[in-house]
Image (tube, rainbow, N blue to C red; front, top):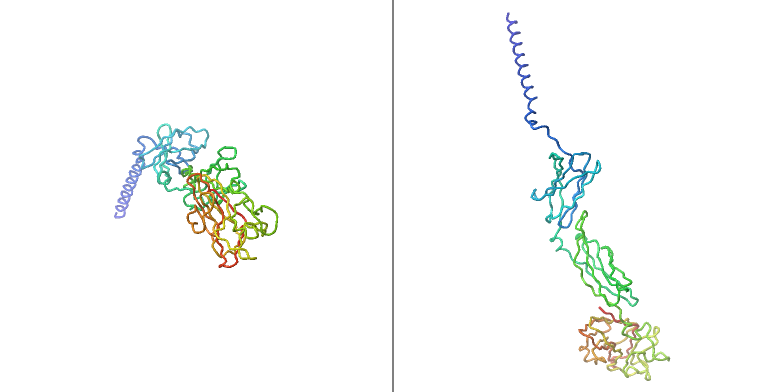
Amino acid sequence: MNNQKINIRTIKLAFMVLLAGTYLACTKADDYKKFTEKGEISYTGKLDSVKVMSGNNRVYIRGLFLSDPKVTLCKIFWNNKADSVVIQVKKKYAIDTLKYFVENVKEGVQNFEIYTYDGVGNKSIPVYKTGRSYGARYQSSLFNRPIESAFTDASGATKITWQGMDRLTGVFATEIEYTNLSNVIKKIRTKIDETTTSISDIKPGTNLRYRTLFLPDTVSIDTFSTAFQTQRVGADITSTYFKNKGNPFVAAASGGRWRNIADWTVTANIKNHGGLGGWCSDQGGCLAMEMGWDGTAQITNGKIYQTFTLPAGSYSFEITMAKNEAKDPVYIVAAAGNTLPDVADVSTSLGYTNFANNKFQFTLTQSTTVSIGFLATMSTASGNQFWIVKEVMLKSL
């Protein structure tokens, strides 16, 4: 009897558990209806393989529309969704490409949020990408590559020598504009890893302009540049103004080791070899002074020079020394007028130096008649003295 009661209770309990389970199952099965009362959620295909490339107050966005044919619209948001663009999409191929310049992007790092839409407004899941725009702040940090020298030699070949720059600035090249021999403006580029630039056809007497080019990062679509800067091109103008400039120097007439030098003004006290002096045959022919040897007289304010008119500008006068056995100071001098000053007044010159330096610079503010050459007092008290110069050079700077 007791066993029957236990079985009946067990059966009732099992039935109640089964009934409760059935109810719960039905309830869960119907839960989805709360989320689909307005229909099933439909997502369009998102933009794939997205890349954001930097630019000048803009970015360039590239991505792929894959096989979803329903996509008709693309929206790009940035600046915390305060700014956006809407792009109409008309796919030509099953897999097509988005290429779009997003303009007026504030300088700095920006977070982009990209959606695609179909014709009824269903959108994709978002695509998040970070990009960067450059602008006035970056531009203000740029500077032109420094030029160490720009010079045209006697053959007409021009060489620009560059100083280095920090590659972290994004610098990659320098652009040069110059006027050629046909009076045509030409443009060339020099890479940042090149230390010199050679130009064979620059028009004499003209300047060049140059600016430096930058890419702020490896994915930049825009090139930044400095403003153009004018660079004066120095030139070897020796042959334009000097006669008998040396290497070798030419004597005025044939003869022995000591002779008079052609085309140069030489004071009489330098001609202390029986009326001859200023030129000697050493090393093929050099401009020279000597005293003491072979009984030659001392030289006081001896001068060897040429006179001509130079336009306003800056100049350099240089010499190539062949041998220097002078004990008293010997000066190379540029002076206004038709002669050189005496040694006591050498400081009144336009420019001067001694043989320790071999070159000096001077500037003319207007067209000026100048005398350029050599000045020395070589006294007997100092002993035998002798010097020879192989060549002179006059450069415009």
